[in-house]
Length: 492
Image (cartoon, rainbow, N blue to C red; front, top):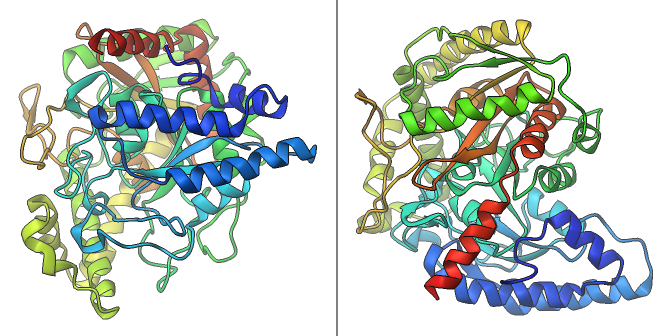
């Protein structure tokens, strides 16, 4: 068994500081594991071994110098292939950008590197992040390590699979409708989406358009502490992001060990009507005992959404469609004809483009009325409860397609759902900008991981982290990685 593969990132960082572990040794260990294990899961689509080893040697010299070290010093990190890293190929999972090499970092990569992390490669994602599944014509599907015939979820599926498989201790992802939490649930890892704007991003030429109001960046890790460590590095204001927020007044580390005594938690088994398969529902319900044992009062409630859940799924698709048309228009004006590659683009992505070309500007602005109704609905719940917990996804398994066009189910528990995102109980929080996380809740009888979604009112990431840490204390999931490792060894 690889000694370093499943060590928590915080422990690895401490070992590096104490000179018990060399950054070069750690990076080499990750590169070796990627070479051996990545072909099975397809988490990394670009690996920059030489650059990572050069960075590790520089990190080692800093350790030996005796200078103070930043919090992530020497830790390998995977960066989602939607997000730019200077000098490393960033394809956005599209043939249109197959050979694109950015000259500058995105804000997340910049802050992670400044905190000492070493970028080891780029992780897989669906084309332009347009669905909650990781599969594309350029690289193919990413599998959850717990079932190599099933998808990791998306759109940060490569990040979640890389962490669950022990390829890297931490990975960065983004979330526009569940893209951190969905793969976090299907791969059995922790993933945190902060309040919209808490982790900044700088987009040009339109600083006010492309990412508003949905996209949030965040960590994917195997422990809640590691997620808090990474999130605090990524968060904080940025003068060139007009939506960025100040860092939370309370450090997430202060919330890690706080008991839940006195907290009121609303448990919604369907988050207002989403269908949920029985095996997922059973695992989530059983996990509530961890919150109760830690002192929380958990009350099952019936959330009355202002419209049926299908309308919110349709709203998400319309808003995503307009964003994608805007992106392609901007690319065309810059001289890049993305649609020149349409014969090698996902049919589901092309359908979104057709949808995005239809609404008027007024129609698009009026969509915010439905978002406002949702905000009032969920704020009514938060007036009485500190947290809302629910399943993350309707199902625990998405079979990989053989033609690189994997999507989710079109029917769950007898209800029709949209196969791109309709089986995800996640997008509601993107609409209103609230923080939400997935924390591993347990496993189905088939051995597949299931996540518990924990959400709070805007600006209250510490309470989300406290609840997730309580679940980790009471129902630790890390032995699941050990079982996975032993199974891999038996399989050779």
